[in-house]
Image (cartoon, rainbow, N blue to C red; front, side, top):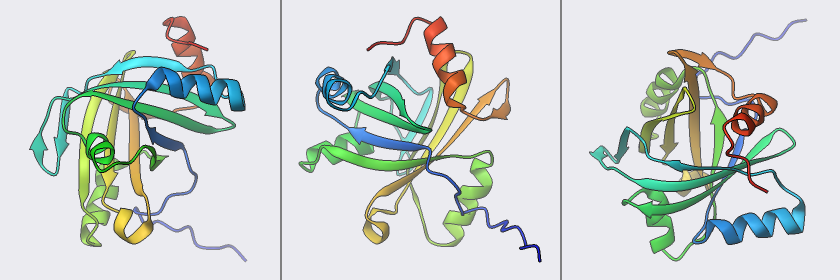
Length: 180
């Protein structure tokens, strides 16, 4: 007997990313690399061309480091400027696990389904990186679920594309953005 495919747009299938907010990006990279062997790290400055926190437009500057452990992307985030939800997290005395991310192809459909279920967007934005556009939305899930969830949609020339780890690493290697 075949199971009917679940088409509920809010559902996620596979964890894609673990987001960690840090005060010192280089110190965190050194720790994860020397202690756990996680790397190589892809380093870049992240400045969204569009970013809203609770509906208010902001212009943050963030340093990000990405690496893979198996098929899961580790994202280290250091806020340089702007009142993002990451900065709020730090100002509340936190550092460490901030969110769990899921790569999706249908961001708007998912956000509409979340809103219908009373789940609001804390922060959302879009940025261009190495010819692709990354759209992201952090969901207000910490109170009920213990951690913020994030939807991440990548597109190239307006067409949604999968963020496949070997391809991402190859692109960053070619761009000279791989560190230790």
